[in-house]
Length: 344
Ligand SMILES: Nc1ncnc2c1ncn2[C@@H]1O[C@H](COP(=O)(O)OP(=O)(O)OP(=O)(O)O)[C@@H](O)[C@H]1O
Image (cartoon, rainbow, N blue to C red; front, side):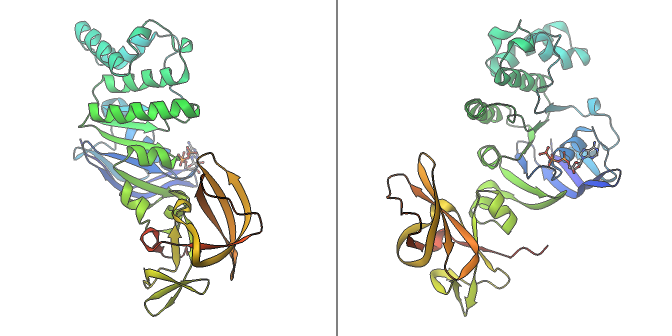
């Protein structure tokens, strides 16, 4: 089922939590809403679920206007950060809740609950209460409960945020598997974590200050970010001011071979892992180093660009330059893209 937000704005008193969001999520597609805290992601999700009412704009499901329908009438599965299982109900009864509310026949409820618990690997926990489960297990039950009603739309609001790093990684794998098991469901996934968005989403919608900044297929947004904000939020790109000389682009007075100047795009975007140390590059000075296990991250100042610092991820098997050392940073053309400077 297609989900369509048509120029949706939400106000809470004087606060504009969401401004003019237009977005279409196709059946079978996963779109991540990615952005910093307070950027309006949850508000957008709540508007689709029916928990908040847009002050302007319409919400459509499969082309039908549902803006005035209450949440229960929309047939949407919702999973939020804090699981929100019913504490007094056992796992199986939590999963059965929506089916019973819809007055499904008993045999169908039993069958469907068994299917859902098997899908999330929780069959042997059916009789437990939520307090007897780990965070990850509770989240699996919450997902089983959301999917039990066979929704055509699934909304996930930071579903992994309350889990520790290992569990998050495990659950991310589970969610990828789940997507394959419900291939026709439209999924909106709210997160502030770019790695979750990259791992799960077909398209990523980057939000900032209540507005949609950029939306594109995940790989495209990562490889060629259209804006400086998306470049730094998605993958922590370095942004370096460039000077155009004819068709050439210069960083701190050094021509970058293979990078062609583009009018209106004054910043060079390159990820920390794509920069190499070599000869004939841009001179930089190492001011900090940080061991990261698989890599060492260098922070460097750039000669001639006093306000800019650059992060470089060196693979762990490379020698780490000494603090204060001057090294030459090579910016391979294939890893460089140009974006417009921020105008705020
Ligand atoms: N019920 C409410 N009443 C008043 N203001 C609200 C309400 N809900 C959200 N807001 C405000 O709307 C803005 C957007 O909030 P929202 O929860 O959508 O952001 P978010 O991007 O999901 O953030 P987070 O990642 O922290 O959950 C924020 O400034 C927030 O304070």
